[in-house]
Image (tube, rainbow, N blue to C red; front, side):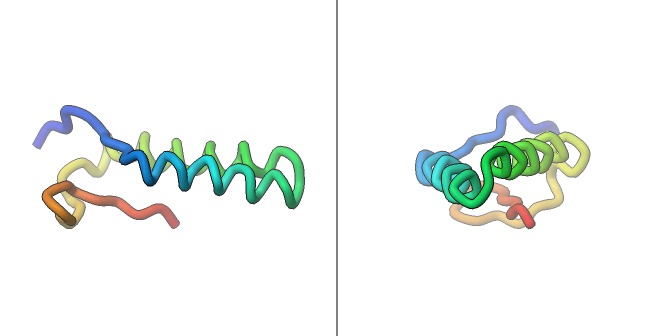
Length: 64
């Protein structure tokens, strides 16, 4: 199965920004680490494409 694109929903994008701000309020720079970790998870989709469960018609991977 080839992945054509990764879709980040608007709600998820807002959650990412809120998460970055949350962590930066605790210690400057931690928000960037938070975003870097999530971007790493997105990059891993190339390796694990097609193994995720479907949720509302899309394959979904949750970050840990």
